[in-house]
Each structure stands twice: as C-alpha cells, then as structure tokens.
Length: 159
Image 1 (cartoon, helix red, strand yellow):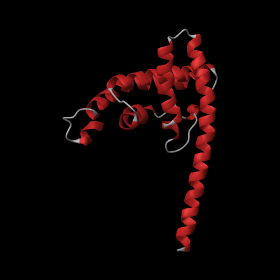
Image 2 (cartoon, rainbow, N blue to C red; image 1 turned 30 degrees about the horizontal axis):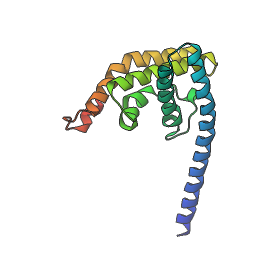
Image 3 (cartoon, rainbow, N blue to C red; image 1 turned 45 degrees about the horizontal axis):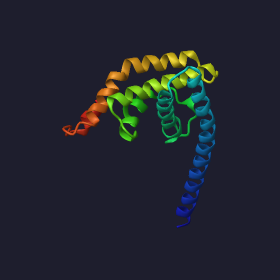
C-alpha cells in the first residue's frame, strides 16, 4: 500500500512538472504566433490566408508538440512524417488530403519565419521541404484511406 501511494505521488509530481513545462512553452508560443501573424501580414498575405496558416501552426505547436514530450517549435521541425503522416490524420480536426497539404504549407511558412528569426537553420527548413515534397502524396493517400468508409481493414490505412 505504501509503495502504491509513493508511485501515485511520483506520477502526480511528474504530471505537474509536465503541465508546468507545457504552460511555459504555450506562453512562449503565443508570443511567437503573434509575431508569425505580423510577419505574414507584412508579406501582404490575405487575412483569410494568415488565419488559416495561423490556425494550422497553432495546432501544431500548441497541441502536437506538447502532446507527449513538451517541445519548442525549434525542437519540433524533424518529425513531419509522424505528424502529417499519422498523428494529424488521427487527431486533427479535419484530416483530408487537402488539409494535409495545407498544413504542410503552413509549417513551411512558419519555419521560414523561424529561419528569419534565427531559431532554426536554412538546412533544417530545406530538409523539411524535401521531406514534404517526397512524402506528401503518401500522407495524402493515408488521409484518403483513413476517411474511406469502405476501408474495412484499418491496417491498410497506414501502409
């Protein structure tokens, strides 16, 4: 009984530290997202386009990057296959081939902004662009299969 209470207390402490870290990163991300919106407006993007990229990016940095292990945006530019090819399809608000593509575009735009801020390198965004170009059709096909009501074998979604 005593061991169980200690484990529960340790788990509660770990959870509290995780939440504190997430809240700290969310606050930083909020500032960064405001700067990103201003950066896009400075590029004369239409307000609807700014809103779309901002929503897509906010979901990525405020939800996905904090989901398991809290990561800052500059630490999260490597796992696009896991995000666009799986997690977004399963947990995103609306995962279609089109939204997978627009989310990829939004992330490239956001990370281009981070390059200008000196938070990531040009080599990192070049690798992102290459991954997106190489894997986008595959990710879109996964999203199509995921939404296909005639798909009877869920294992075939992720091939």
